Every structure is written in C-alpha cells, then in structure tokens.
Length: 469
Image (cartoon, rainbow, N blue to C red; front, side):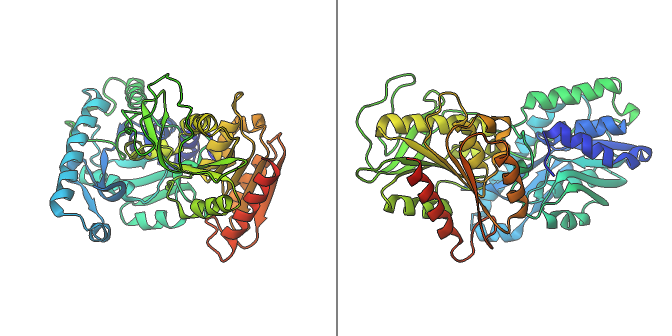
C-alpha cells in the first residue's frame, strides 16, 4: 500500500479505527511526522489531540543508531544488546540521555504553546506515528501512555515491517497497521510525499485541533504539562555544513568554479550556494567518456559496498565514478531528511553541475533505492544535462509526477524476488516518456545479495552507460 502523504495515511487510518469512537478516545501523535497523521485520526474519531513526547537515544559516534528512547513521565527504553555492541563509555551514554531530556522539555514548551497536557487517565489512548522502523520509539510512546494512566493503549500506524507489529503487542493492547510489506526498508519509501514536517506545522495542527474542541480540548481532564520532545532529533537544516577538505578549498558562494581538473580521491563538494559541503570519492580514468554520479538510498552512504562494487566495474571499464553523501552527518540524524526527495534531487543536480564543469565530461546517474527517485527527479529538471540513468532496486515511483519529464535514457533494474518493488517499478515505467527498459535479475532480492546477482547489476549498468555515453 502506497500513501500519497501523511494526511492521506491519517484519513485511511481514521476510517479503520471507527470502532473506537465509543471508547472515550484521546489521540496522541509522535512529533513531528506522526502529528499530521494523528490530526486526521482525531478528526475522524471526534477526539482530543495531543503529542506523545519521547526522544530517541543515539550512540554518540553514530547518532542514527538508537540504543533506546526516553519519554515523559520518566519512561525509558534501553536496548542492552546495542549498548554492549557500541562499546561506548557509560558516562557518554548518560550524557546523551541528559541532553535528550533537556530537549524533551524544550519541545513540550514549544509544541503545546502553554496549553496543558491532555489527561490520559482512564482513557483509551490511540498512539499514532507515520510508520514504524525499529519500533523503539513506538514502544517508548506506549510506555509513556501507560505511565500517564491510560486505561487502554492502541498503537496505530499506516506502515511497518512484518515482524514489528507483533513485537509491539507486549506494550499495546491493540496494534492497528494498514500495511506490512515484505520488502520493507524504511517508512518513507511507502509515501509519495515524505517531506519533513516542520515544528510550525505541528504547532499549527495542535492549536487547530484544540480550537475545534474548545479552548480546553480535554475539558476538566487536562493535567499539568510535563517535559516532552519528538521521536527524532531536529532536522538541523542546512546549518554550516562541512568545511572544505581533501578536495582543496572551495569557491566562495556564488563565485566561479576553478578551472583546474580535480585529482582522484576524496573531495568536498559545495551545494546550497556554498553553505553545505558534501564529501565525495572521485575516480576518473584517463580518457573516460563519462562520469557516473552515484546516489545512494536510505540507510546507506557513499561507503555502500553494493554501489562500490558497481563503481569498480565501471571504472575498470574506463568510466569515471563519483560516490558522495547526499546529506551531512548532522542532517542524517533526522530520518525525514533521507526521504526529502526534492532536496536530495536538488543537491544531486548541483553536484552534477560541479562534476561537468570541473571534469569537463558528460554525467550519468546510478541511483539505488530512494537515491533512484532523487536521480530521476534531478534528471527531470529542464536544465538537466544527464546522459543516462540506471536504477538498482530503486523507488522511481517516489519521483512522482516528474517521471514524465525525464529525458535521459533510463534503465530500471529490479530483483525477481523483490515483488513489491518490482510492481512499483512497472507502474513507474509506464509513466516514463524517455527511452527506457526494465531488467529483472532472476532470483534476486532487494539487496542483490544472492551469488552472481550484483555482478548482473554491474554488467547491465555498464552496457547501458556504454550504449548512452
């Protein structure tokens, strides 16, 4: 099941939950992305809306790797196996928890705007998020609801991996999930529009829901507000980005690019008018006819072993390759950034412009998973100069209505056993108006881990770029 956006997911979820209308429900959303979903659910149930405030605890050197979560009322979920695996000093982990607790308090003040927290005592509490990935945040949210006196806890989400819903039934009396796709890799892959939800949107929706039910959304049931926060760190925006590195000093914002052709190795590539610098690994053999720019997928990076294997095949055949990170480490902390296809496509376009000017070579795109959507959206821009696009296990459907504007010859490669993604690729192919082909690797899954599967991907990509220099 693919959702148009969070509002669409919320409306569908609200329709499924109609039997709760008679159970005195309160709907609570996980900020930020869960709140637009919860807003629609609350409207469908005629119920008060509030935020359920928890905060992910990330391993200090790899903040995307969560070792637990904390929430209002002292709720705490710790995954001891991840703590042991991380081998991080206990004092460092405690400092992460102190920092996130302070952020909980700040977010509570900001989101509620002085309104008291809705009292959950003796109520049926519907905990809503835009999807479940690991389940740590949802687990913590259910524990928070219990700690605040909920009579019954219902966890409701649009999408989750197959095993997650069952595991969470220990914390929730009922788990309602509209879709549990076998080929689940990340929540954002199941939305056409998964742009990040700003704080301002959360504040506006909470205020609007409160006004719809009167100044006090819970009547005389409101309780004193406590500390709270969201279930993912702040987006961090573009910030100051990364300083120029091994690639040498970059140009000032708006300044001309240097004419000297860059050497092979690691470079820092400017985007966002020079306010952000992205690390990339460049290799250009002598007389290369084309440089292939790689756009990795969610949960991956320029270090992806699968993309590097394809890059080795291309460089051995004489093609240039550029693997780079689409986001800074600070930006990757907020997972919604990983699915902001518009931003990723814009940055891919800027990096491509850098490569064309500095290398004086045509550019092709190789995109994996959500990176394929970014590649196709970038290739659809009116000023795009892209020789060819190859998608590996991609989500071209996430490029939305821009698919019809792609002019570059496009090859879609999908594993034969990756049935859900294969179906999405077939639908996307029907919307392409450029020269295109769909290649199915028999017996391969989404990650092409089977013997010979990645070799087949590399060979298919090589032949496509050879045919479309």
